[in-house]
Image (cartoon, rainbow, N blue to C red; front, top):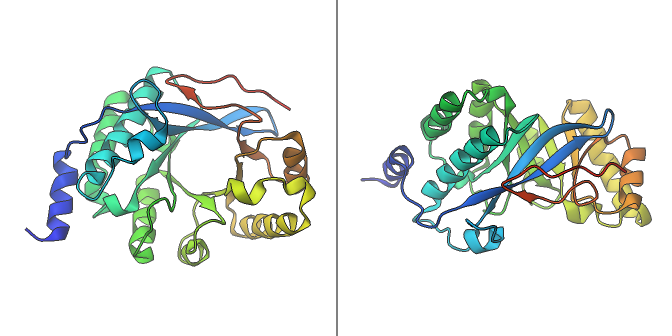
Length: 248
């Protein structure tokens, strides 16, 4: 069996990921009307252990099963809560051989839960280096065609994000938190973020400031016209629950 067919079979058959997982949820807020835009599902161990304890057990032999399990677990818990707004799910592009095939379990779970596809955001990060940007862009295009929203996470941290943006314009971009740290006192960071914000406005991409922790950071970003936020200033992730939002 060739490598491509092996990947497809693993995805279709739900290759097992032996460690049980759960999810924590962190809100993405819209400060214009103090509403919940979405919640990001963040992988945790079965009793709330940090993501690192789970991710360190993911490798080439089980990443397909892990990716599928994360999607299904996020949907089931979001439906149970129930979760307002959209649900943002991280996915591993190297765990997707063909988008239309590897999405089957997600589509079936959403159908069983009566969870509208339009409420699901798939966001990609560079925790796992993507070797083929054309492949990733193809996945994102396929997801959008199916009715999902798409997002690039940690924008500003990955080496290939601008190249990806040239080929595919997602619905959302999440600014890397390290780029935002202390931005209220850093003129260089302000120029960089203002430039990204301008690009996003011209391309009609919504921008999320991720990892905002202080009132000063928030004030600086709000002055740039950014209105979607995620970070400890507003709420920490809550294990298997929806946290209360602290509005500045």
